[in-house]
Image (cartoon, rainbow over all chains, first blue to last red; front, side, top):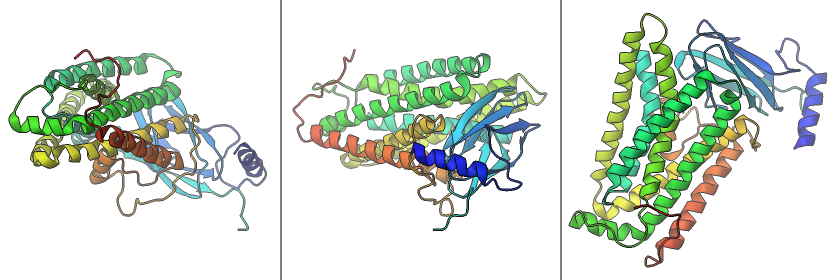
Length: 116
Length: 278
């Protein structure tokens, strides 16, 4: 498991996809003016990532993703850290359970083109 | 206002359904009403404390602490539901005789009244803390707050109403089948809660995920739809489960089932449990 994770980290570092928003440190997702910023995150598949959710609004938010089994409350002007992944390539929806108008997606892309 | 109502409805629904099932399943046990009511009261108190803590404390609490708290609460509920179900499998027959005969106290074995209290308490606490946090925030900010608070209360009322409907629906099941039906329901409910706990522990990196999205049935039934959410609460439906969630679900299911079979086969043997004040 660890070896796999290490290998994935290394390959992700070397073969970074141009334009993809990753991923040396934690990935930051902001909540601002009742919007997720950005509302689409392109992240590497196959590795475990730390996601910081930063709430710049006064209202608390509940970041939730049934696709990723994630559910965490972020108080107003607060932030939380959670882990996501390793994800398979694909699209994962998330939303604010306290305001379902606020939606976003995570697009997980393979860090390397696999031969198999 | 409507949006607030919907959010509060969703928050309250899970606790309401769990309480309805627990009340249904404990039908005929004398004194259960008081214990469940005490559980709801303590749960609301606990929810308020958690909400206040979340508001004043700390990035420590939010994130890591939150997930740990949720996982502990859920696993407590699973343990208590297990106890309840195992007890019922040992005494369900006497109870269903008693329900027909009306109102005798069950003599043998320890009654799972503490379990009822803890199940309702933790269910209310988990869902309630989110509801309190949300209502508190809208009550203290913005000029539309009165409307939103009213909407929120409407949502709470609707959630409770659905719980009542389920409860009275359950009561319509003939007594002969009643306890086996509610036992199965609790078995699935508890397995679902265990899977949720696994999700929380995985979220903060304490458990591996053993595969993300082992299958995906979002196209057939979206977990975020109302029906999907109902099934999620009642039987632990997860549209896109991770491996660890499946392991916890199946593991809990088999453990409880085995315990029920073990103790259910020998009805004269009292169940060994921790002290029960009743």
